Image: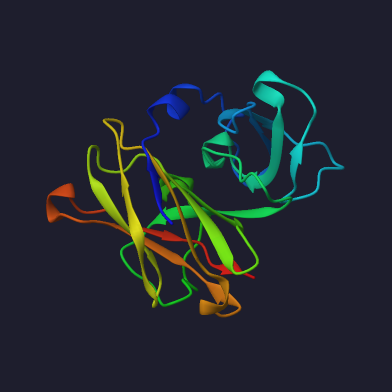
Length: 200
């Protein structure tokens, strides 16, 4: 199943935690509808990857803990129906191997959003793509590397876009990765993104 969503409303609502030189534990906050609202530093007791219903309302109805430089890496939609997820950065890089072994998020200048994976069902893994600062008004192919194309994500006038997909969990090995590239060459150079390697 594929759901394609443009991020205009979510992008306008972003109130990210201040950027830092290296990753830190952050809490991504979501409203009652599961849409991203803000981000803040996580307490020392926070469990990485935990998705929780806080019992509050408004912009703090759900929380999700990630490791990132700032709240721009928070997925646009909290992965409802699961209690844990994993978020990794997207990096501007033309190519790599099947598991993106040489992809690093050490240079903040090449970061371009994130990919979040979570258990969608007993057999499916959900994928939430959050693309930022890419070519504006363009369509990008989202591929599970060395496997198949999951679908496409479209960017808005700012170059931001979001989409959600899923794939059969046992179709990948212990490590896997994603490639996001423009459909048209007119999008220009430097608009291909690789995810940091994900380990199951």
